[in-house]
Every structure is written in C-alpha cells, then in structure tokens.
Length: 192
Image 1: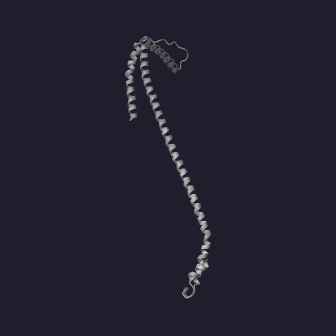
Image 2 (image 1 turned 60 degrees about the vertical axis):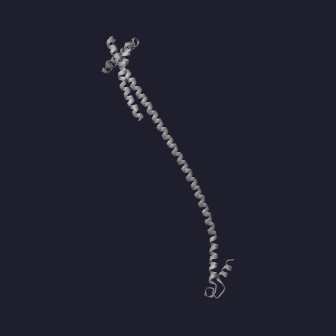
Image 3 (image 1 turned 45 degrees about the vertical axis):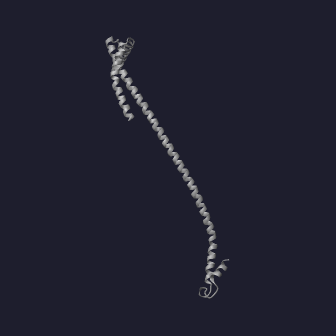
C-alpha cells in the first residue's frame, strides 16, 4: 500500500513540475540578475550546440559563433530554465526511489541473514541433540553388550546344572521314582 501511495505521489509531483516550471521560468525571466545569468547560460549552450553540430557534420577548425540576439537568448534561456527544473525534479524523484529501493533491499538482506542465522542455530542444536542421543544409545548398547557377555559366561554353568538335574530325575527309580528314592531329592543333591 505504501509503495502505491509513493508511486502516485511521484506521478503527481512529476505532473506538478511542469506548471511549477513555467512559474519558475517567469520568475527567473523577471528577476534581473537571474535573467542575466540565464541569458549567459543560453549563449554558452548556443555555442556548444554549434560546436557539436559542426563536429557531427565532420567540419573541423575554429569558427566564429555570433551571440544570439536578446529575444532568442531569452527564449532559449526560458526553455533551459523550464526543462532544467523538470529535469531536476525528475532526477530527485529517481534518486529518492533508488534510495528507497536500496533501503528496502538492505532490510530484506538483513531479514534473510537473520533467518539463515536462526536456521543455522536450529541445525546446530539438532546436531548437538543427535550427538547426545547417539552417545546415550552407544552407552546403552555397551551396557547391554556387557550384560550379554556376563550371561553368556554364566550360561555353561546354568546348562550344566540343568542337565544334571534332568539326569537326576531320570535316575529316580522304577516307574519314574514311585518305587524308589525321590527324584527331586537326588536332583538337589547333584546340584550341590
């Protein structure tokens, strides 16, 4: 919305520059010192125009350029003053627009840098969290591995006892221990 208002404002200022240029022109032409200066500038502009047109035609060498009469000089001066005012207003608007765009670009770059910095911070935190979780999992795996080795070390003894208990139950006597000593007592004796 602000950009639209700015664009309309610059368009209005450009349109107002033309009537303002004619009032500026009439002021310069009615003020004696400004009129003298404008006529001098118009005489110089006339000489420069003749020099450029001769160079464009391929003519070389010095040529005498007579001064314009006062009526033509005033007419050219009034055109120069009017066009110069319009040009100055237009150049000021272009400069102001350029400066505004540069400030907007700078703000956009700062916002992007801040966003990038926040993303980098978040990624760093996620990496640190992942590293911490990885270490915790590694420690847990190491603890499980140690417990597994301890169980594997105890496994042959447990298997031996289980086999001995099984054999003791089998030797319990005729009909599975009904007529002889109890299998449970023998198994307990064999284990000890």
